[in-house]
Image 1 (cartoon, rainbow, N blue to C red):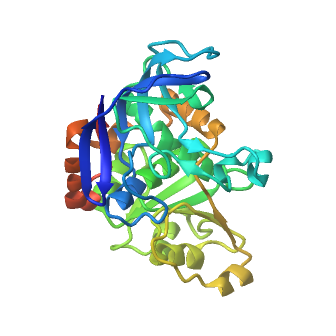
Image 2 (spheres, rainbow, N blue to C red; image 1 turned 90 degrees about the vertical axis):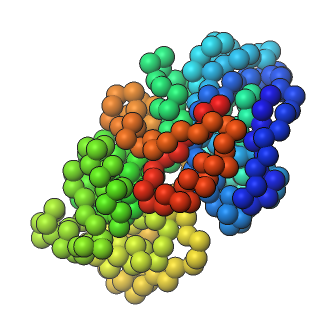
Length: 339
């Protein structure tokens, strides 16, 4: 089978490897689509702190079931599926209380463990989720980032219904966070510096947007929400500027969910956090229930996926996909690898 191996930052070899087989309790998948994630791009640039080389990337995907091992039930051959990518210990404090997504020994496939950038891929049956028959493979590959958004939205105490909510960053994750927030009943305002990404947001039904290079957050919030402003913010960029905007403009008693991955340590005005009783809360990956909710929202049309896919590349052109992402910059959203 063909397998894409990142041998070093910026270097990918397409190798021939023996296809794996499904052991007891495992499922053999025929990979069909792989989404390229921002974290994957960090690995390509050699800037991911927890990934070594060589590595087989790929953690957001859609596949068909090729075969199942002994003691696997309820997963028919030929079914469309995806799977969670976390390898966890099951014994640490977090795992024992059900928070396995922040396991002390967490290894994510595609980063600290081999991923799915190959024609065939084996995973434990317990990680597999069935997709509706009418799902496209592109929709299936977008379940993982949608689950990130579902989990982030769930980090807001009391839910989002009726809450004035700002999403800072309209890349793929920010867009999906905004769509999930809308599904959960929030009044949503989306921010970015890219008119292209804001146009994609509007194509996904997110009507209230603003370009931070042309309008301040304070002015945009007043225009959209009125004098009360907003009391929930999702930082989906991972830079100090947007974190500062959120902290300085949110209502007293508001909550800021930190979704973005910060390459550099930001300075946060903790005086504002203390004096205004703000809550800063992180969000990390997802649980199986978040995947299940993401599938429901995509199936119902609550999450619109088609405008998010910018371009497809075949597995043999994996490196070309990264070059395209680098060259296109903020004029791209989700790039998909066809296997």
